[in-house]
Image (tube, rainbow, N blue to C red; front, top):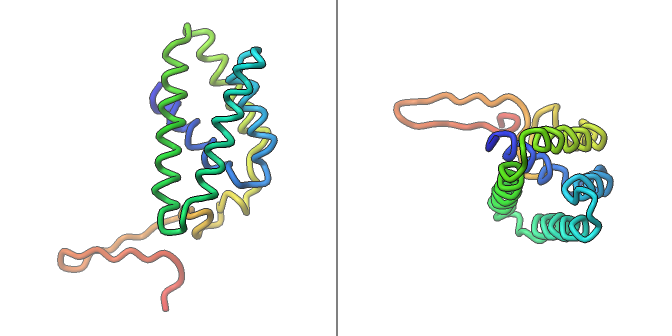
Length: 142
């Protein structure tokens, strides 16, 4: 369950700042609000704080902030899922997955072609060691 919560939390954070954010934000809040308008409002506030924190992060701290937000959302979702009976838990997971599928960011925003997008590297990585050192290349060789 922790793995599922972490994956869902990561999906929330990765969508922040994309064209899909507004729709995904509303869908996630509706699902997590579970029919209670006041709960939905609280979730919208959490989502807005996440987006604001990511947007305000200095470039050199952006990856740290992204990881922090992923941990926050993973923990929040794990706590919620653990509090639910099995049938409700699976229904919530399915509903969230439906929201993510509906509002999946376009491929160019997800960076599926490889490269660095939103301070996240997407694509294959090659690591080669030389005498106890490690060389990591991100991007074209010069």
